[in-house]
Image 1 (cartoon, rainbow, N blue to C red):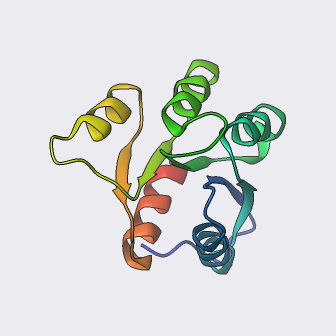
Image 2 (image 1 turned 45 degrees about the vertical axis):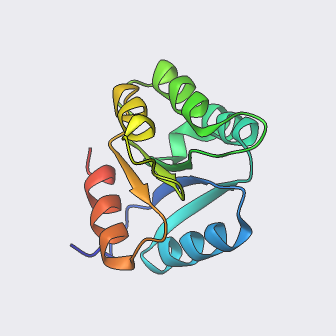
Length: 132
């Protein structure tokens, strides 16, 4: 499902990743889909963005390996503030035994997305998350 560019409703997403290339790719992709983007480069910035801009955000993509405050801790804080807020975790290192994925899911993540990811999968994921 493609997000509607014609929609008068403006959606917003928080993207938290320390990798500038990942942030640039995701931001560009989301903006092309008509989604406003708030980028955070570390976990503390992600939590503060959520606290101060929650009314403008519909979902979040959070990297597990964020500096300052890791992604799992960011997830826990976001879920403590708003248990229904949709969060997908991003990871460049999915372990073979599934510990990272099961921990993230147990703390309320909708899904753990392995890097690299493809546009079609992201489009479907974001559509589903933003229709909460």
